[in-house]
Amino acid sequence: MKKYVMPLLYLMSSFVYGFQADIPHKPSVINIQFLAEITAKGQKITGVALEYEDNILANENLRQLYQVAVFLDDNFIENRQVMGAYTFHQPTFSHQATAGKYVILALDEFDKSADLYQLKLDNISPIRVRERDKEGKVVWSEKVQSVKIPEYYNARLKYLITQKGNIKLANGRTLGALQEWQTADKSKVSTAYLDQFSHRTVYLNRKENSLNYRLYQPRDKQKNYPLTIFLHGSGQVGSDNLAQLLSSKGAISTLQYEEGFVLAPQYSAVFDPFDQGRGIHWQTPNRIDLLVKMIEKTVREHGNIDKNRIYIIGLSRGAEGGLNLLLKRPDWFAGALLMSGREASSLEWIDGNANKDNLMVLRNMPIWFFHSKEDSISPVKGSRINYRILAEQLQAPFVKYTEFSTTQAGDNGIIHHNPHNTWDAVFNSPEVMMWLLEQRKR
Picture 1 (cartoon, rainbow, N blue to C red):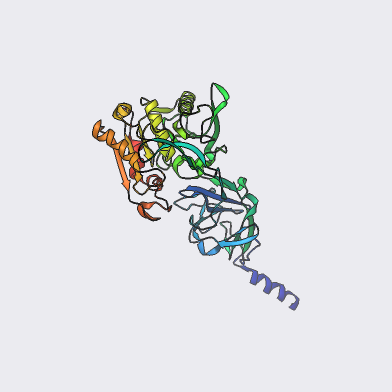
Picture 2 (cartoon, helix red, strand yellow; picture 1 turned 90 degrees about the vertical axis):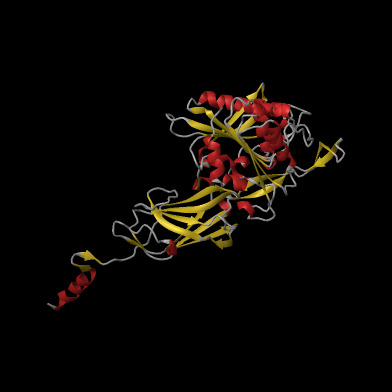
């Protein structure tokens, strides 16, 4: 009889009313995906999606369970700030947790290790351009038009994800603590909006005279959508067809409030080799003609673009280009946001050319200008002159102007320490973005 006692005691300790005692098992994370966003300071890793073998039982208050450490070139950088942890049914952010096998770790976008790339400074040699001196005479001068090129870390950037304790699955299984490594290869990074932008190129007269651009298109082809054209500034000149999407929220600014089409072109050099002597950046007639062809092609190929809702958004040299595009085809556009630009009809750095005759065609165009009075890169007088001609001389009823006082990072919601940057405030303003999206072609 005694020989049956020990097995009986074991069975009693292992089962209570027919249930096996809970024993943590060695866990197995099936997949780790980085979640990234375009922020005011570029593309950042702002989350991690952990895929488990089955649904998680608890769906919120999981933050204390995880630690996220970052290494670059095998050197420890920091532990990321975990702002929240919850379950979801797919590897993406959500405002509401749901039943699911994914644990979403929300990370602080302001962590110093949130970057996916470093910026390489290029194009730092001075160029010769024309401008006016203090007496108004046109003279030659030297300017630097540097650019910042994103260079991705890829496998050099590693994350160590630690699950510090137990987690219960919906199937009753308990998973014990774990540690998993994941490199930041491009295939492991999912970026909201950015991943839907496709690469395109448009040509004018010959193949060498081309303009690269990105196109965002909504998935629903049965519904009509607005079209936004975003024009970058001098810092995003290049041939990667990417920098214009990463440097600010400009390309996604309207998408944050309403789904729609977006065109984001990029030119490759300060001077236009196909339009010598007639300007720089977006000033040349050739580049404006390339923009016109890009828009015509896009509208022709996508019948669900609402032709009464085509908008322009331009910052810095892109604001100048936006104004030139409006002047070229005022009949196309419903409205524009122009930030930190220059006086209309400027040539290189030569200003003093704006007048009511060349701005007359924009008398009924909804335009909202923005500028900081401390801007030393693109002087505030340019936007003031444009606004005064339109509002005072032409009595334009739909033109608006907002001027900032910007002396430190944080003023007016501008997180960069740079008075030239007014777009931080604009792209994060529902007031401004909804104003634009409410405009219709007149």
